[in-house]
Length: 353
Ligand SMILES: Nc1ncnc2c1ncn2[C@@H]1O[C@H](COP(=O)(O)OP(=O)(O)OP(=O)(O)O)[C@@H](O)[C@H]1O
Ligand SMILES: [Mg+2]
Image: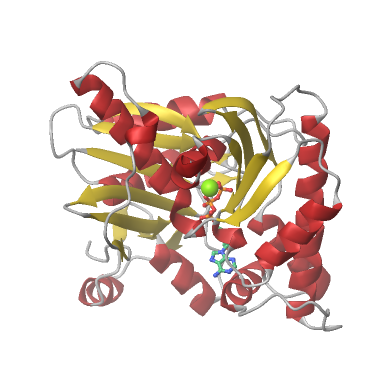
């Protein structure tokens, strides 16, 4: 038994195998305070909303916090910002502990192996990920898992590039950050993050159009396709403009960092994952930008992850299964680990209290 956990600024996702299937459990990494009254509590119980009672009132957790924030036109509070525990949010750690407990559940065996994702240090902001990484590791250990940490970009490579012997460039375009790793035969040669992702798009569109940020996020997640032609004056037009700016910025930073290393002279496949890579048209935008950028390494293929939101969690699970196999017999072999599953099931967030 083994599990993978993607701890992200917007989503916390657990991957595990159930028989032949890979099952994902997901929650938004968010919460929202409500005034406590019996009526509210009864309503929340009936509708099976996830919440906790505190002295000051009630905190809704996860997906429900996000939904209610949009309905009440309040801001959902976020325990993490820019890929790490938010220094501005006093309740960040206890709230995340609850969400992680809910998503992860109890270990199914003694010393069950767990891999959790962690971001790489950003190249464009003065931020260090060590405190976040160590805190999350301790939190998972406290739940009695044999916990290990894996770089988010490497998890993308583990998930998507087994056919390439885990050689390539893995990119996760998330909410708070974009993580990038270049690996050769499963060994990372370069890892970094960029302080921009989906949240940056939401902030810029909100500033430009005057729409509240939550509305922009909602609109962006509903958008069916990023249009090639920008519709002037529309929120969708602004979303496309900032998507374009984000992609250009990621490719520029990738090229800058590649200039600082001497990678092996092989052609690298590139794989793009993360929730922000979901809208139709994003991959084409990314591919065009990358092809036109005269990258400093040869690119063999540019690939969209098969299920961008769940890629990092699946990569963490593959790492955990590899480790577990290694415990059983000497010399774990990454290439033997294919956590494919006949079908993949996604469990929505657990709604019961
Ligand atoms: N269907 C969708 N269309 C567009 N964007 C989406 C969609 N679904 C989710 N997103 C965006 O994807 C981002 C979340 O992606 P993801 O879960 O990969 O990030 P994360 O892992 O939580 O964050 P990070 O890795 O930066 O800490 C958010 O900005 C969210 O608004
Ligand atoms: Mg992420």
